[in-house]
Image (cartoon, rainbow, N blue to C red):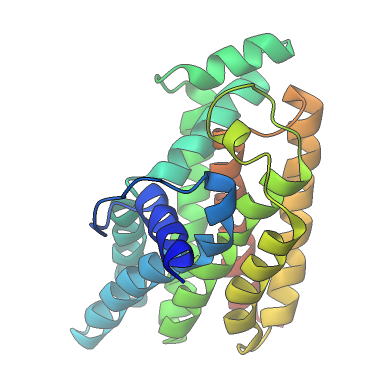
Length: 245
């Protein structure tokens, strides 16, 4: 039990900026903590959902409530996943070779592809969250935050590491059991919602497209690809849940 708690603590410390105690030696490997990524999503979702609920309770419009929830997510994670998405936009489409793409992705500066990618994806997430606010579906915000963090676990398990170092390389040992546990933790809350099953299917397809693209562009996954996977899954989940089917 102590080992599992340490793994959950590592996942939360790694994926959020929420103070959650100091990691004690021996720190578990990242691969062992991957199953707990949806628990980090639970914390982010509670923060964003709480902000959305408060905004709606104060009489603010769903569009404003969605924007505030989006900002709360970014603050809770330190824009970790957004940074990864911007990096792969710059690298995947700004470099002509695998080596150049990986080099660009390590550059801390953001280019035109990354800027456009962030504007588009932030806009889609804002609109998706606003739609959930319109439906007063605060619980869905929490479920999406949890389910979207299954994507990095699956990418670590099913794609080779594109580099010998970095976050992606640390996750090479993620096993099927960790993926299944993450899927249960992240997927079950979403399945309780209307259109939850369809949302999961659409998100899985979107992440699969990202995985194939990453394999083609750089030969596998990196920490940036993992962050982009979370963002891709979140957008797919939000848009599907808010669709008028």
